[in-house]
Image (cartoon, rainbow, N blue to C red; front, top):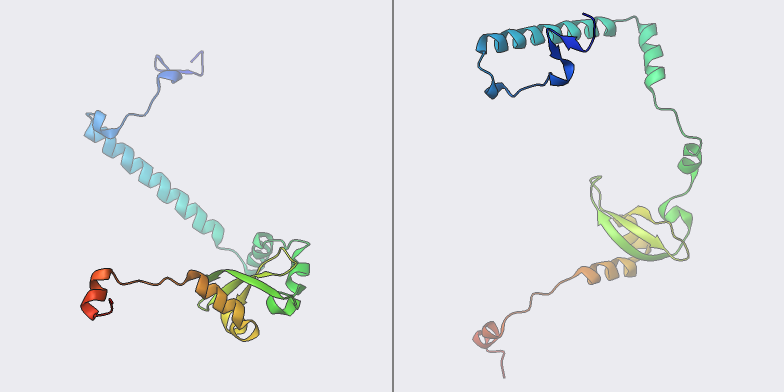
Length: 155
């Protein structure tokens, strides 16, 4: 071949993948699929062979794959959270139970940082803030005038 971009009198720009439904060559398609399966199984075998190693290799691999701690991480771990910060709660801005325990997202007075605090602690340490949170979200279903007349509540 004089030019790498030409294969069997076809230019590589003309080389496209056609959807299977546009093709009328079931034998070639099945042959292609079988070859692809063989290539994939060969690759899987190579990967599994590479994974078999001695324990010292595994230890080295674990160390290299382990996430490297950020410099600020130890500072954040030692930093007090929630009520341990000795701040005065301002309001609860949300709630979640994704951890299996009801937690409130607490906004603190004179501080922009909010913390997740266990609801059981908030119920004891700042019950009025908890009550206000629930009152803000409480909805009353009022009965219609028809129901009132049936009950005899209309004057």
